[in-house]
Image (cartoon, rainbow, N blue to C red; front, side):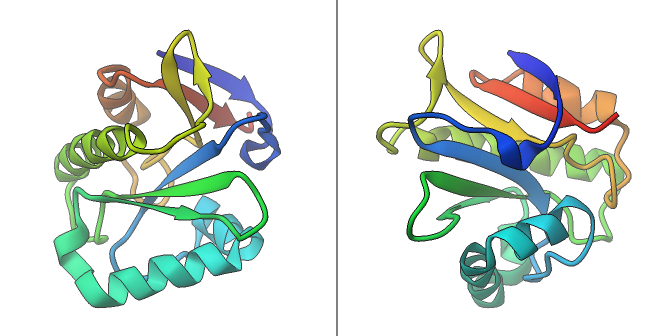
Length: 156
C-alpha cells in the first residue's frame, strides 16, 4: 500500500526502527538530489554504502543494502541500487523491482521494525523520478506490487 505524505522524509519518527529508502547508483556516490541529503545527514551510513560499492560495483544493480544511519538512532537506510546512469527507464524499473524484492526479504530478518496493519513500513521519496529520470507512474506500479506499507514523501 502506498501512502503519500507531504513533508520532510527525514522528519519521520516511530517508536520502532525506521526504514528510509532511496534509489542509488553502484559507484559509492551520494552526490545529488535526495542522496546528497542522506550523505549530509548520515555520514557514517554513507561510508558503509561507499565501501560496499567499491567492493562490488556494477554487480549491485538490482540489489539492496540496508545500513544503520548511525550508532545512536533507530533509523536504517535502504540503498536500492537501481541505476548506473547508463540504464534506460525500463531497465531502472526492472532493477527497482529486483531491489525491492531483496529489501522485502532483508526486512523479514530485522526485529522491531515499524509496521502498520501487520505489514512492514518503509519511507521514501519519489525514487527514480529525479536524477534517474524515470516517469513516476512506472516506479509507482512496482512499489504498489510489493507487500509493504510505503510512505512516499513529497515536497509539492
